[in-house]
Length: 120
Length: 105
Image 1: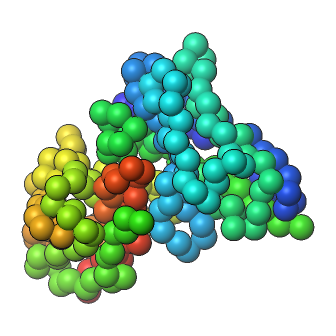
Image 2 (image 1 turned 60 degrees about the horizontal axis):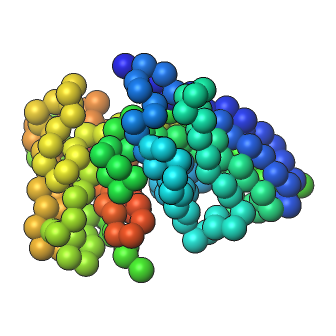
């Protein structure tokens, strides 16, 4: 079974930075686009960012553009999300997901999520 | 911007059919996926490419998509199907619907 394990969530002050990671296993990571999706407490799912299989193209929601950077290390089977200038409204559980057949496709597998809380 | 609209809640009796709709402009021309999320858990894909069911998803889950509306149907709803359901499509970016809470009374 596909395994996705997020880490890096924490309590951070407004304006601060955080780097999330997603360790992938049990599939050939370099063949798949990947996505970050977040869910604020008691709210619905919100797409955050996607990256193509080779990392050559990245995409962002308007709400995070210019503040978040998605990247991947195919040699280490790891996906990252660098978050800067964090705001209270960025507080959420962040899920990584595998996307098929490309970044515009469906989210076939999800991690358990990591909690980011932005508060002073 | 492209939006997907879902009713906030649907109630269904055990054994009956639940229909969860997702509306968007010309949605019928796009692929729609559906995800089930139970409290405290991560989402699970239940329907992709409008009508396809992943391995391990029960046959009682089915999907359709035409015009401006996609529908997830649960036939013979069971108590374990009580969850939030989200539709998703792509229109220059990934978009999720607001979610529908299915309550099995």
